[in-house]
Amino acid sequence: LSLLRAPGTAPGDTLVPVRGVAARSATLRGMGLSRVGHAKWGILDGGFAKWTAEGRPVRSGRESRPLAVFRAAFNRQMHATLDEVARRRTDGRTRLVDARAPERFEGRTETIDKAAGHIPGALNVPHTEAERWLRTQALPRDRDVVVYCETGRRSTIVQQMLVDPEGLNDWVME
Image (tube, rainbow, N blue to C red; front, top):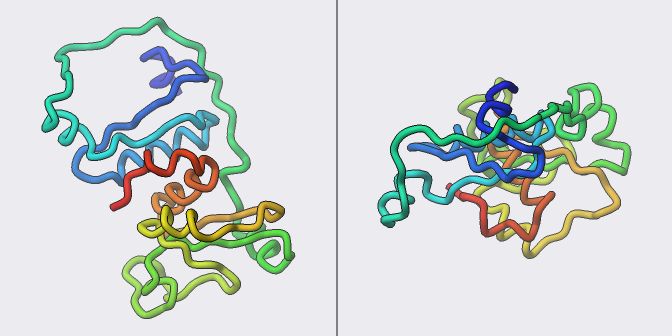
């Protein structure tokens, strides 16, 4: 958290974790920001490589901003325990969304998790298709939504799209 104070990160600032080769690291940084209560963040489309390739401004050396007070607040809405999901998946008020690829959701292949398939009752909204899916489908607004994947990266992308549907064009789809 001192890393957020040092560069002068204020609560209302929009942060853009810059990705290098993989969007995964920037997405996971953004997810971490959300978990400590800093909800305004996005991912630079194409990363620093695309920024420089397009001839956009670059500066060497350190940047400085006045120190800011950043008070972390654990964002309880970003977490659902295994027991909560087990209890809520059949309560009629919660919609589970699996952000993994269809072949993993359907149990045709599994490369990471111990078991193939998905949590019973879940809806498959792959992160790579989420923008199209969310523009053409609707999740009931009167239900809580729990989005999951294997590490949090894919589910974070889908979750952020649900939170900020107007910002869909700002998200990087791999």
